[in-house]
Length: 208
Image 1 (spheres, rainbow, N blue to C red):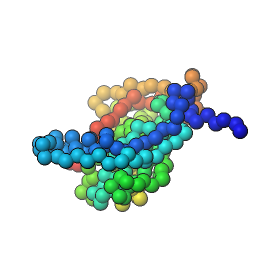
Image 2: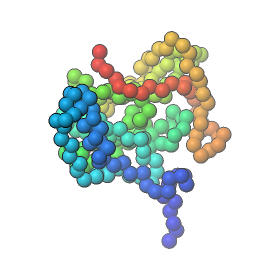
Image 3: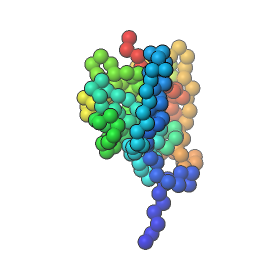
Image 4: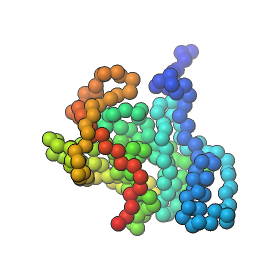
């Protein structure tokens, strides 16, 4: 029987499991204590570790978000760490029983990647927003005004809307960098995007 190489690079010889356990529990506890200021009254219970998803390909950099209706969404990055906007690949899983069981991966391009800003909490309409990092100059002859992708998750993750012409403006021109694909050296993909703005947006989206 021919042995299968279980990973895209020798640096990661095993599957990429996404787990929910003590880390998430303590994160929620610490956030609650920082908001309420009542750390002494917190009761932290550590339940069994649950595997959300795993893959022989890239399946890493997860994020956890909860809808106002109770569903928990775990976002997952499925592409390598590279400068390649047109090769971005991501997914998310949904739990409807407080994290005990999880759905299969709902795959998509931009939108469920860790590279971007998410709603700190669901908006008043129950929707979670994600503003993706990779942008393109609009118009292309400058880099102060960029076009970004905004993803909106609704109905507990069962409805996704993407707006791909959200305009973001900066006071100074963004630095441009060439595409870089992991594992291909100087080889470039057949892409029309030779240069990409080196702009990174992390943190929370707050409703004004």
